[in-house]
Amino acid sequence: MQDKDGCTQNQCEVGQKCVPAMYNYYICLTFDAPCDVNLCLNNGVCRNMVNNYRCICPNGYHGNHCENKPCDVNPCRNNGICRNMFSGYICICAGGYDGDNCEWNYRYFTDTSGILSSPNYPGNYTNNLRYKYFIQLQAGQSITLTFSTIITEKCCDLVQVFEGSTISDPPLLKLSGSSNSSTTVQSTSNNMLVVFTSDGSIIGRGFTARYSSHS
Image 1 (cartoon, rainbow, N blue to C red):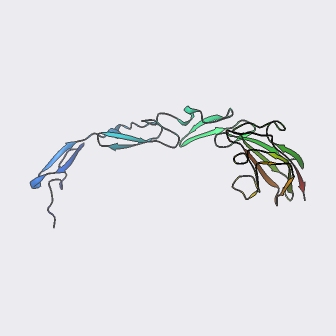
Image 2 (image 1 turned 60 degrees about the horizontal axis):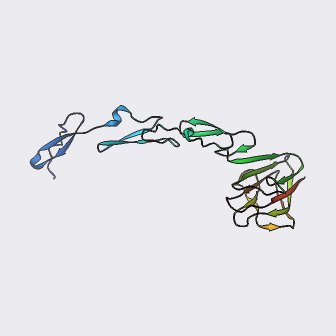
Image 3 (image 1 turned 90 degrees about the vertical axis):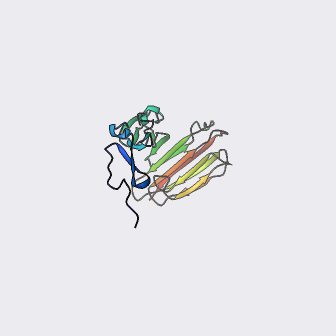
């Protein structure tokens, strides 16, 4: 059986740490506990370290003491309004935009027929675009979408179509490159999402498409 050492009885005072020594002796070492005074701001969690401390910040908060709030760096784009939250932030987007940081241009279609096109068509679109075109018809109707023209950078500027309202819904079509022949896709529900994205290099005329409803 292992002999008890001098620290077994924990004979050191509060604020000291007992360290076993030879011949059943012990040494009491004084240590700092900075977290006793709660140095972390904005609900940060303080952790004592050897001769130091560390603040574990909520999501979005940063700085040695979690003193910097997420909205300090203005993460919301396109005139979105930033609101600090307990564990991060939320962007209140201006009309026509959505996304966590209001990074998506958003277009909403409810008529039984209509035309979708890339920005500035038939002129060239610009770099670094994020566009969503959401078509929502009455229940029981389906949607037929026909692309008549597409001219984009083949590798990186894409038109994608989804069955539903989000990019997590089943994909129906992906187009890029150049084509003057028509391409048609049809949904099985009354919702369809068209997404157009461009990168930071080559641009083109983009696309145009017409949709119609079917019972």
